[in-house]
Structure formats: C-alpha cells, structure tokens
Image (cartoon, rainbow, N blue to C red; front, side, top):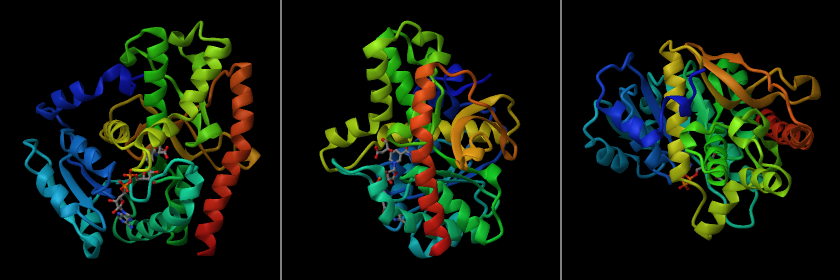
Length: 341
Ligand code: NAD
Ligand code: LMR
C-alpha cells in the first residue's frame, strides 16, 4: 500500500515534486475560502504540487490578493483569484474543489457550535458547485465536518448530481496528529509512523486504531488513554493556544495538501493510494450511520474501495461504541438542515 507517509515527508517531497517534470495529468483545483487562515497556506502548498496545473482561489474577501502573491511562486500551476460575484468562473472546469470556508472555533466552543454559521455557507457553496462543476471531486474541511459533508450531499441530491464516490470529508489532520503524537512518545520518525483513524472529525467520534500500528506496541494503560485523548482533542490544544484568534490553520493547510495530493494521484491512475476520509459508507449503515471515515482507496473516479476497519482491540471497540451514536446525531442534524432549508 502506498500511503502518504510511506511515499513522502511533506515539505521535502512537495519541494522536490515542485521541480519535477514528471507530473502526469493536468488538474484544475479550486479552493473556496482561499483568503482564510487555512486557505492561504493550503493554496501555497497546492501551488508547489506539480500535479496541480491550475489553481482557482475564491473567497468572499481577499482572494485576488492572495492569488497575486502566490502566483509569483515559480512553479508551473497558473493561479487566479476570484471575488464573490465570480464564483461561476472560479468553479468552471474545476476537477477538485477544496472547501475551507467558514468560521473557526474560539476557546470553550465545540465544533458543533459552528453549525449555525457554517451550515448555510457550505449549503450555498454546494449549490454553486452543483451548478458549475457537478462532476468535481469535493473535499470538505469546513466544520463541523460530521454535519457539513451530509449537508453538501443533500444539496447535490436535490440537484440530481450526487455521486457518493466524489465527496470527501477531510480528516487527514487527525492522521497527521496521530503520527506526530505517537512518534513523540516512541521516539520514532513520524514518516514511519502511520496511524489509521476512523469515525468522524470531532472529539469522541475520532477513533485512532493504534492496535494496528506496530510502532504503538507497548503504549498501554494511562499512556494509551492519554494518547487517545490527545488525538481526539488535538484541535482544542491549538484553539486554546491561539486564545480566541482561531484554530489550526497551518497544520490543516499541510494536511489538506497531503489529502489533495493523494486524491490526484489516485485520479491519475496510481494504484493503492489509501487515505482515511469521511465518505458515504456502508460500514455502519445498518446502525444508521450513513457517513463514516475509514481507509479509502482513491482512484480515477474518486472512492475506489472502502476498506473495512479490520480487527479492533477491546479499547477500540469501546471507542467505536462511543463514536457511533454521536456521529449519527451529527449526520442527522446536517441532513435535517439541508432538507428543510
Ligand atoms: P478563517 O476565518 O481564517 O477563514 C475562513 C475563510 O472563509 C475567510 O477568508 C472567509 O472570508 C471565508 N468565507 C466565509 N464565507 C465564505 C463563503 N460563503 N464563500 C467563500 N469563502 C467564505 O477560518 P480557518 O481557520 O481557515 O477555518 C476554516 C474552517 O475550517 C473552519 O470551519 C474550521 O473549523 C475548519 N477546520 C477544519 C479542520 C479539519 O480538520 N477538517 C481543521 C481546521 C479547521
Ligand atoms: C482541528 O481539528 O484542528 C479543527 O477541526 C479545528 C478545530 O475546531 O479544532
């Protein structure tokens, strides 16, 4: 299996790829919310990915400035910024759309507290995508991901253009954090430390499968509990440290660029590209959970294969038991909002 960590460590690889001449296909990527805390570093990293040949940066404010700045980076992707009235031009021809538009948390808030603001932002962007690029691969970063992905899907269903293979909730930051935090404990190189994370993207819905990682052997008792808690609530660490000015932006820009890179490699025909991502999934459908993150093989048409979760330890089974009811509620809230509005 070719994974993001097996293949690469990020900055080094993105830099090397930036000057490689072996990119295989032309790909237009649109970033919606490109002027924001995530949007800016994400767009910069995408500009250094040689598989991206055209970047379309959209925001309700500031995107032309960000695009002018990033366009001076000497990589081959063209880069153009679009203002609010130009969303149609921004999306036209986009094969991948990444969406970090919306408000971030402040200390004391849960991701669900963002629902009231971000649900309508994602709904409206979904309407625009349904109209201008219905076949694009859509990567949702805006929180609460557990609800915004179902919202996006419902808008596409209403428009008659929903393809469950082309809609992804980006949970890569949980995978990146797991790798970092576990490496810190075990003294390993993060590039050799890969943890599958399943479930959703908030608190107890985040379920790391440490028992499936050789490097995690020996992490038990309180150390195991602390590690799981740190992975599940890693976002809070950043929200606290930023003290009211926002949440993770730079690590998210990095994680988003990694996910888009994997997605495009799969689209370009590379085999065995696997990432955990939150998709419409049969795994827990019988328990009423319609969307679920697990390892997904990415291919020419998006989701190629949804891997089962594999063998779980008794602790992981307990974590999953706690995840499913919360996830089910978050999904239902998104569906209800989109169908009633
Ligand atoms: P930010 O406030 O810095 O940036 C958000 C940007 O979205 C702003 O530039 C704003 O103008 C823009 N925006 C708002 N409404 C828009 C619309 N209708 N169309 C286009 N752009 C619009 O916030 P941020 O720190 O970049 O975070 C963005 C979102 O990502 C938040 O909801 C945050 O919770 C989420 N997030 C998700 C993850 C994840 O792992 N999935 C990680 C970090 C943050
Ligand atoms: C994260 O995990 O960092 C993001 O979801 C932002 C947040 O609100 O914690």
